[in-house]
Image: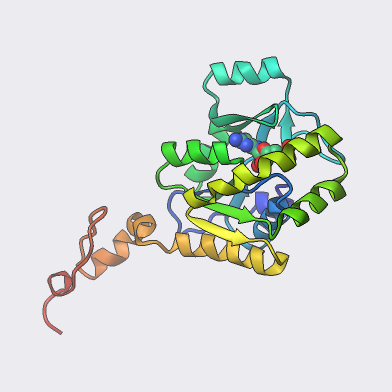
Length: 236
Ligand code: 5GP
């Protein structure tokens, strides 16, 4: 999932601490393809490689799509507090490595977490400045077609995922943004636009803009709103 070109990209010097971007959708919602596009087109974004107890599918490789571990190893990681969040999704355990996320954010890179709706809820509670995006498949029928076309799940697994989809979609209301995945180009551009817009938020830029603001005689205080005349240096 993490393309080589993305891994080597340098962080933008204008960026402070990287953002945490949660992307969720029902299984088969096509978020993987969308995220791949964004990783290739938006500089300074990386991807969190989760740990999972499920077996690799198709061409999946350990350390690329996931770190595949057995249940005792996963449970030991829980015990050692190595996960920022973890959840049981359709009978398998999935978790986000806290250190991986912290390393990327500290380096000024935004990091995308492709996680389920339970994980998204945990991140919202734990990381208030995170951004969450729900990817909505255009129809239930299309979701089914995608899952069938993937052809890597057992029939029971496929049914579990289909049955779980409505309650996952119901969670859309708790996300900051919703991207309708009806067209891959449009949807990936919209996801990229969310990242660009969130980067431009005043609160995210206060520390990096301080020097420039001070040059104008403006003292920026965290959370403060500059209000015009008193922020000007003398009369013009
Ligand atoms: P799949 O088995 O299809 O790769 O993933 C099943 C579900 O688990 C997807 O909704 C995926 O986003 C989610 N998932 C993947 N990694 C994580 C993780 O680290 N934490 C949580 N909570 N969900 C994850």
